Length: 113
Length: 110
Image (cartoon, rainbow over all chains, first blue to last red):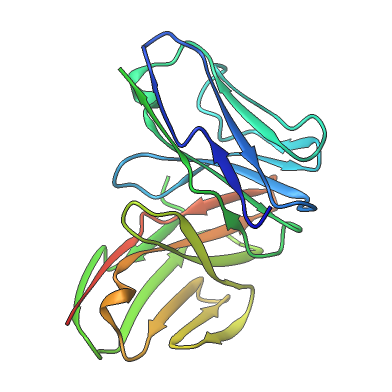
C-alpha cells in the first residue's frame, strides 16, 4: 500500500473487554513500532519488531498488553481486560531499518468506558 | 521519565517570523527525529539526524551531539505550519527504543 494503515480507526470498548488493533506497515519495511499517545501528550514507546522478532517490549505498560507480528508484516496489538487508563491513540510506525525515518499510521483511538 | 525535553511548550508567531524549537536530551543517542503532528492528524517525519544539519524547504534541523541538543528552525513561517512539533530520540544501547518529547504547539497567525 501507499502508507501505513491501521484499523479500526476508532474503537470504543467497555471496561474489561479485550481489543485487538491492527497495523499494516509499508510493504518491505523491516522495522515496526507501536506507540501510545494520551491526550495532550507526546507518543510513548510500547514495543519494536524487526521482521517477526519482537526485539524490545519494555514499553508495554502491563502484561495485559501483547503484540505480535507472526509473518514479519502485519502486526496486532492486543489489550486484555481493558481499563479506562488504556484510553489513548495507539500509533504504529514502520521503516526500512532502524536508522531510517519512520512512517506513521493514522492511529487507532481507543476509548474505554 | 524526562529523557527528552522540548522548549517552548507553546509558541505563537506572526506569519513570516523565524521560528526556533529546541530539544535537549539526557542520554547518548543513535539518532534524533523531528516529527510534525497536525490537530487530529497523523504524524509525519520531518527529519532524522545523527549529526550536523539538514534542510528541507523552509525547515532546517541541527544537532550538537556533544551538547545533547537539537533545534528545528522554520523560516518565513506560514499559518499552515501550525502544528505540534515533536522531538524523538533513538536509544540503542539498552535495546531499541524511541523516547519522545511532549511536543511544541506552534500557532502561526496570519
